[in-house]
Image (cartoon, rainbow, N blue to C red; front, side, top):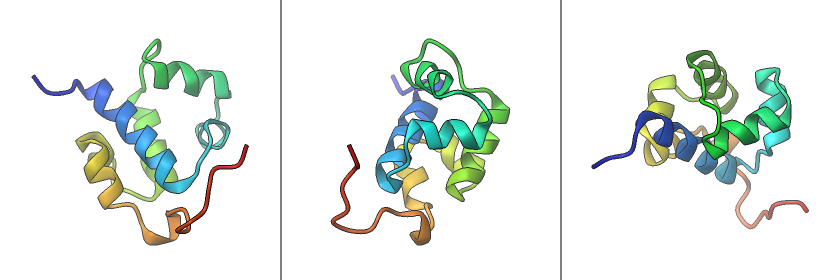
Length: 92
C-alpha cells in the first residue's frame, strides 16, 4: 500500500527542507503561522491544508502537483537557485 496524501506532503516538505536548508521557522513565516503549527503538521497531529500546499509550493518554487506527488518529484523539480549549496551544513 502506498503513502496517503498527507504522508506524501509531510515527506515532500521534509525532503525540500533538507534540500534547501529551510527551517520550520522559515516555512512558518511564509505560511503566516507559528513554528509550532508547522511542527504539528509535520508530525501528523494536524493536517496540511490545500492553501498550505499552495503556499509551500510557492515558497519552494515548485508546482503544487509536484509537491503532492511526493518527495522524489518535489526535489527533482526544485529550482537550482533554491538548493542548498554543496557542502553546506545545517546551522545549529
